Length: 258
Length: 323
Ligand SMILES: Cc1cc2nc3c(=O)[nH]c(=O)nc-3n(C[C@H](O)[C@H](O)[C@H](O)COP(=O)(O)OP(=O)(O)OC[C@H]3O[C@@H](n4cnc5c(N)ncnc54)[C@H](O)[C@@H]3O)c2cc1C
Ligand SMILES: Cc1cc2nc3c(=O)[nH]c(=O)nc-3n(C[C@H](O)[C@H](O)[C@H](O)COP(=O)(O)OP(=O)(O)OC[C@H]3O[C@@H](n4cnc5c(N)ncnc54)[C@H](O)[C@@H]3O)c2cc1C
Image (cartoon, rainbow over all chains, first blue to last red; front, side):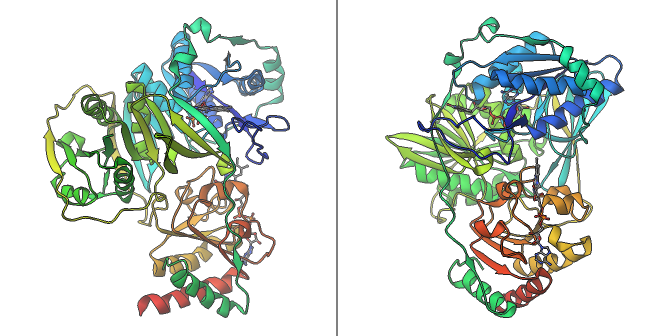
């Protein structure tokens, strides 16, 4: 059972995001990068499956700048066995091209189960897993909260949707995206961290995959801007009963919501 | 340009999100055709409503095996339809099923896809897609480089157009041969322990945070919600404390909602919470701390003890809503 986890390094949610002067990207300096929080659930699930099945191998891959090595190193420290970096040089990728590169990489590594996060909290498209699955012609379930093995070739996946839980039966190989609730991610042990320092992070170059990313770009980012600030709100004063009456009146007469 | 839209049925009803997609398609179509696809079982009852939202064609793909969502068969059907109809644009709701379909279909067709769009504009004769990134701290604009393109639209953002009961869409039944070798199958749908209103498509949400102090106190919010026909949401700390189930969590690790009205009670307004609700049309904050961050995004705020304010609000709303 070969499990490949796709992880992305993203700015910490607390990070102050500054748009560059050309409005095409953000200023990276000063940003603290973390592993995309949903990808931590994917990593944890891979480790749990490995611990349960005796023949599982785990690998983690990321497509990104050289700094993303840190994210791979953290994954190794948790106990993932193999790490692959696909360096993204100074060209821009969209969701199709990045998923295409990831799919080709996974193909090269071999796979039975591909795990990713439900969405990257920076670009927030929630599409990469589905595109990988489609390109590899294998099934996809997003937002998994439970994965159970039926046998070596089939799994059951639970996901919550609008209050209900859908339970799918899926033939492997498959792509599953992880959601909060799937598991409780562990912390790396000191020993894990020490061992990870010595492990090799292999590199697969995009060119070596036989890909010219320029031919794959489908979508162009044209501009970044800050959201228009919400207009300054009103604090309703007076005693609380008056405030409540004013509020109800506002909602009915001004906002016309009630 | 013809626009293809995907309708979505839940609990034997066409979802509001599908009507929003139809409305946006109609606005963009500018005289060209809007073709709506419906996949499922027993679909004839929905045509009148779809028609009144201005569709020129309704494609029905009916089969008992399609009564339940199946990302593989649904996306295969859509890929075939899009190849045949060659619409310029494919629009669908950006909810869980919609986003899965969007990824699978767009990748098969190798077309541009913008997910979770909050606005669509025509600029220099090209479509510009707006999508918030970095937890809503930045708004990104995209253009498609492919002539066919797809976008998934965030629910509750795009306004509905006025219904036109006189519009007569052409209804076309497409044949379908069920596949018996599907790689994915929905085995069952487990019902929630108790039936409560779901938050992702609710028009009004009353939401509680750690200021509620204990699980029982959510009763106060439930009473207010009942008067308003609202759903009850929660902050992460309220969920982590075990007061509410995770499915009701609003925010970065919960759901992104954009109701018409969001009432935040005893919620401080951490960035990870704001990500989930700052696109709500009207936000009300009730917090005893006048410095609380939530007031920065609120349209109206009341500084005070929620245990006093919420029952007063319930009472006032009751007065106007029961008259
Ligand atoms: C400077 C800049 C310019 C950009 N320009 C464009 C542009 O012109 N057009 C455009 O469409 N987009 C552009 N993007 C967006 C970028 O290409 C997205 O990262 C890409 O679309 C993937 O989508 P996502 O990050 O929303 O991932 P999602 O689909 O939300 O990610 C889901 C999951 O997929 C996996 N995953 C995602 N990305 C990776 C990765 N790189 N490596 C490994 N696993 C991953 C993770 O498990 C993640 O949890 C730009 C981004 C930047 C920073
Ligand atoms: C990676 C990550 C992901 C996260 N994801 C989410 C997420 O999805 N959703 C989310 O909500 N959070 C999320 N958080 C947590 C977030 O940072 C905050 O900790 C959380 O939102 C705070 O919840 P709260 O507002 O209920 O609690 P607090 O911050 O403790 O605020 C309670 C508020 O109640 C007020 N209050 C207390 N008593 C009363 C009273 N009697 N009357 C009126 N007001 C009162 C207080 O003044 C205070 O402002 C995430 C954090 C991280 C790091």
